[in-house]
Image (cartoon, rainbow over all chains, first blue to last red; front, side, top):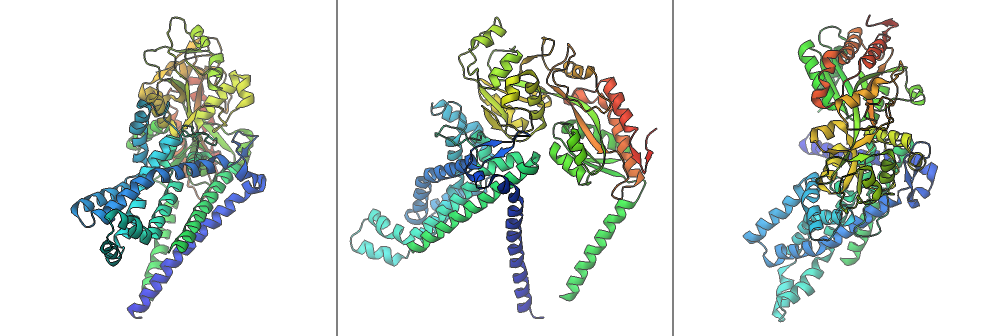
Length: 283
Length: 352
């Protein structure tokens, strides 16, 4: 057997394993979710009532879906100015300089910090700070979680966008300069439009990351099974309720939690799909 | 390529043979595996380590939660399980074979709070109900002051912290609340996780303690082993005799002084003993009554029962207070020993 053939077989079998794992996940999620959907029907998605008390069990996932979407969207909103400015700094203004290299490494480092550390930082540093400036009265809730989430997703958005921005062809930019454009005009009318689909992809990636984040959010959101009605309200997210309740769950409750996992899977899928559609339209 | 696969297959077969050979071998190297409740984990870690040092029998205990312990025993992947809530008759019937409960020590649920300068807080049953149902929302409420003459309470919102994860601690707490409050029983009920009317959730005892210690005006419930180790502010709770009792080793043990059924399956909350702290409870180890199952050797079964017999003996019980658990009363220990003497291997009792 020649090495070419062996490589082919190895590559094929490895990719096949990934296919099996992903398929197996969907299969077991759907299988586990059936009892909950059979009992509650579509009401499982639209109901806000979550009552694990024995004998009157009733599960509705809406508070968690709302909590996940609200915190993730807020995080994206908060992180946008920060990561957009950083990516311009890294990819355009200070491209290939030592400053950019150091800053770029720092940004990547942010991605490597375990989420429990972000949670602790939010708990012991950010939360007391928010209270001390009078922004919050108890500090647990949507705003605190979103702020920490925003910092957590900065590296995902920044790395990809700065890479794409730095790849915009010099010819384009030089042409604009030769027509008398200022640097600001070049960025606004040449660089960003040329790189927009890549930048957008970075934010989709960051949003997906925020959707699935568990530990840091659990520590900060207050874990109340209600739909948050303000920035300062407590709430709960899909990933957080699974992490909290899975250990002691059985029967219908276990199925409800698996269903939430399935819904999270579907939501992430939809977000990626919409993202791809938009990217296609842009480029 | 073919030869690589052959080698791999042989290796897998060989190692699996070794595994099963190990399991069937009797005698010297018996090791025990167990899993379950996290509440007694520090106690079990300590005594099991002592036991393996003196008797040479390795005991591995995984703190995976009471539910996980019951599931592991159902799947027969452990020698024994551990749980903070006993299995009721319906759950016993769901097990593949009859099981027995062995109480190993007592713990309590402590009402921890954070109010600077207030070292004594007496909570009547009525106050507990009103605070935890959200009917009293500020520490300067007249009802709290009336119950604590001489204490000046601040104008501070009450922040209730409960467990966000399913837990035996919540089970004991809610069982007590259900016993003392009709309103609680109607609105919330008993369980490992509940539909909380107010408050915010934190994960695990460390999470709850952390949140309470961070927020002035917070109140919540935590396992006694954590509260004692962290030396938090603890409230005196009114027991069924009307006495206000602080949770201590003695007052927790006292909860087991009343009548205990022979199978030891009882919630000790709201005990009738006048000295008892009312939110106390046993933690149990559960095992199959017939130990000959899934290829288990007699040595394995004997080691299991002997370990548990030692666990309820005075020698092991004396270690409990060192890690903040209350030891069994003599009566409870005697009942545990009697139960262990009903455990059989192929129909014959193991201990005499």
